Length: 554
Image (cartoon, rainbow, N blue to C red):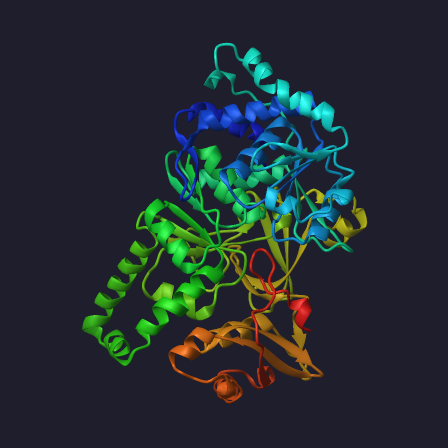
């Protein structure tokens, strides 16, 4: 198995020097652009502070706040110093945040003012210093006088360190071993059972160098990041890879509702778009499906002379809606709804679907859009990763997907027993995902092993597949399928906007759900039939990457 030889931290030293006068960071809706030299200068300033207050390479520093240019700047300052970053998703509860701080052993904590106000200072006594991510001010700590003195004298010390001003030749970072843990990523904040994923320089270099060699990002290209940067997917390909390439990152910094996101895309005009399925599914259902489902449009799509013209115009309009400059859209984080994928394929929209997990930092498989196979999750990364399916016939009988290679984590922090449960002695990582695999390494996902339901007749049922079909039905916003005493029951949060548009009263929802159940069952195998559909009165609770917390609804 080939290992990319590039030293992960040195990638950024080279990039920041080479691209010193190019734009690096912007915050959407705010004036001003930080150049790579400006970014590097601020990083050097933070390095001096960390040294002054006694932080050593390998020490852990936690970071929690809404995505921003300052969030990126702080992240890069920590890893290029040689410390280990502990990015905490801002959606976690205060108790979860405190638990992660303690579990990780973070010496410092960089946190936004809004989140800091939700935390009990009495529970933060283990942190030597807590800094505001918004202003840089000292908020709390064990020895505040010592740290404050370092802050007060820092401007003069920085000026003394760079008497001729900070120049590109001053950009220099330590040679941190690729074996070192760079990121300690907690995918869950659950206080009773935390898993800190240890990602090394090797793991991150595997992802970033693959992104560079695949030309996902290039010098001077534009990026609009709206995925959580504390999550491995956004971190690797909306931040680390663009910064290593010399791209200009604009941080959306707000909730990516369809209206907000489409406006930002039209203004920033990014060259690559990373998304999760939910974003495209919402846009398809709200803006596209009502148009293409009209009798007139359906008739045009069935007319040989007109259908290609209609498809081309639909494609042009959607491409323009997303800014018009992108080469492709990469969708990851979950399976894409079948109806949405079918439409995008029909109009030849430039999209592809990748597959990964935090434990692989995150990438396992990816195929450029022109080579993408419908309903797949891309091809296993050549040279970097291997995959296999635990099945007697991997191409047709689903089994658990196992992966091995450079991107696989070093393990779970302080949890060797838990690590041994998922990584065997030969280095194979049990992903927990069920699927098949073609001879060329292309992966086809079916569902999670933990969610699979065994029918009374012994058939494997994958709830995600049923939910995809159910979510494509009119008046269904989202759903989950559960097993109740041997019967499949779907919980549905109705599309209230569509109900209002059709003037359907709330008391008619049960009858409507029953009609949907009958219609859906007509498309399902006998062992997949739904016994009932129950409407719920509010959206399902979700993880920060917008996956439904299924365990709450069993």
